[in-house]
Amino acid sequence: MKTATAIHETAQIHPSVVIEEGVKIGANVKIGPFTYIGADVEIGEGTEIYSHVVIKGPTTIGKENKIFQFSSIGEACQDLKYKGEPTRLEIGDRNVIRESVTMHRGTTQDKHITKVGSDNLFMVNVHVAHDCVIGNRCILANNVTLAGHVTVEDFAIIGGISAVHQFCHIGQHCMVGGASGVAQDVPPFVIAQGNHATPFGVNYEGLKRRGFEKAEIHAIRRAYKSLYRNKNTLEEAKAEMAQDAKEYASVQVLIDFINNSSRGIIR
Image 1 (cartoon, rainbow, N blue to C red):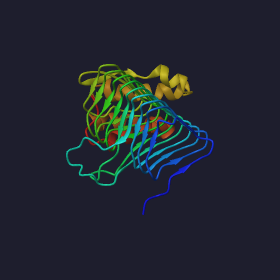
Image 2 (cartoon, rainbow, N blue to C red):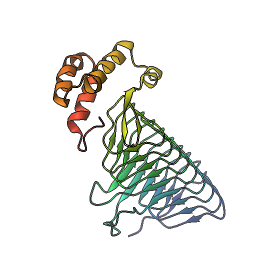
Image 3 (cartoon, rainbow, N blue to C red):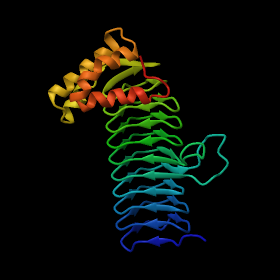
């Protein structure tokens, strides 16, 4: 049984927009000309969709997002194993999705879902592949490409023309420089650059802007030195970091990230 179409009376929809059955459109949504909204799409209140956008379901889009022209949201993934199984894309609130961004639904080989948090900026031509998980307040610059199953944690920044290998994990508050190729996990708080990306220090300015106390930043810097400057093995580095981890939660976050890494961290 198909879900009934429900369009709020305050929605502003151009006459040229194509809307399939089973779409839910919230209050004060604006949809520009020549946009296509497929079945099983839900669009939250205050979201603005510009012209020539394609949105396919099952896809849920939260409140007050802005989706610019020529973006393709919720399309079937490019994984050859995908055979049309029911999978989803979920997008949170207040994201800015610029021109020609592509976001694909998940696969049954993972959790059936691609998930995007809130308050993110996706610049022109970003690709978010199947089963990716994006946190909150991230910035992905022009032409960033995420392969399938990539996780990007809160406040991460990825520079333009960078590519991230499938199953990689980008840690919170880290910065990946432009034109990088990321083949292993990037730990939280770290600046990475190059092809393949290697560590270049702590994201000091980013941490200051986000309100980290000076003592905590110094603890993160000590952890970075243990990990990358003191010629330690991973186990030796974690042992050195353990004392600071008792006092500073960020250092424990870093240790946990290393312990949970499936591809290994950049070195």
